Image (tube, rainbow, N blue to C red; front, side, top):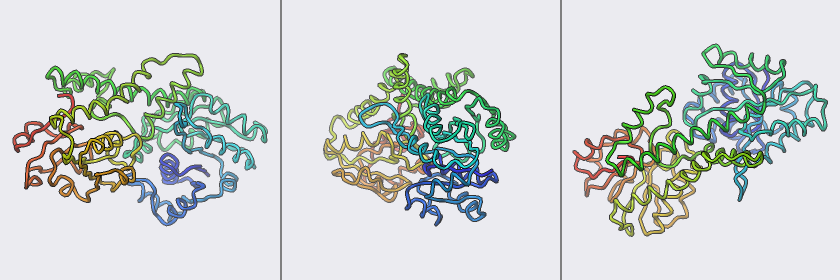
Length: 432
């Protein structure tokens, strides 16, 4: 099939590349000339394991191409995926849909035959209705079909999630579009993915409801971890005991920093805005947002206690600063709250992350990037494991602590407390 992916961000690029790997002809479109030129030269603008190899393979085989010409790309394609960003509006909680609607207007001038137009971006309830209104101003409704097909790709696991999805959600009541899209996704359905056909509005809400629920699980176990710390209980015992109940499940029950990234923060806010629009109170999700907002402050208080309330001139190392492992995404990472706060209090911060130096910290006083783990921890008073990269899971701290022994604060609970303490280090973790 001939596909057009509008937007070469995380969703558009990964989905487009994977669709081309399934044998489809895919054009990835973006108005950013530099990004398109980079992609044509095999340079990937995002960090995602395995993506570069797939881009090179399918570009070489001419199943994948890159363009800045949206109108011509739409004309050449049968199925159009809208994959542009839907960030939170400045000063508000709702999603900024300006990119979605601008793309819809451009598509409306390029329809030369029947097109299936799909919103793969995460969009609030009724967005599909608005896109349909925009496009129908210049086109007969028989010439196009608006469908919602939300993505469920985890950063760091996106290729695997695309190839082996739990489910494929197609939001349309039109039989023709449903038949074509089921055929498009057949290679994944044959591997075990469940194909779910719903109304368009239901598909839009499934995505938001899913992210809000996962954010709730993270926030719930973080709050339980707070109670565990006060009562001498190991939160990991609680997670295992709960997670073995099939009604609950163990995923997303790992205590640690506040949730971050490109989805949960903005999507929980956006679903609240949608609820307000329809005069519905989503009190649970409101509480989740509030609790997650307070999470970094609680962790900073713990750092203060660990250092006996003496932050000034202390040398503190952060191992990992992205919001999770296997991604270079800094959006809403708790490190962006913790590092500036500690810096303001006079601490000297060094950090190491496998994805390199971060622009977010370049202008901060007394914050320095280290090229190696060894360089980062040298001379430290406190080492904070902030992100659960595999690079950090087998560190021999004894070999690194030549001059003096530092305190270890493991925010991801990746180490055994007995093992670290037997090496002679003071060790703190979360929820224990």
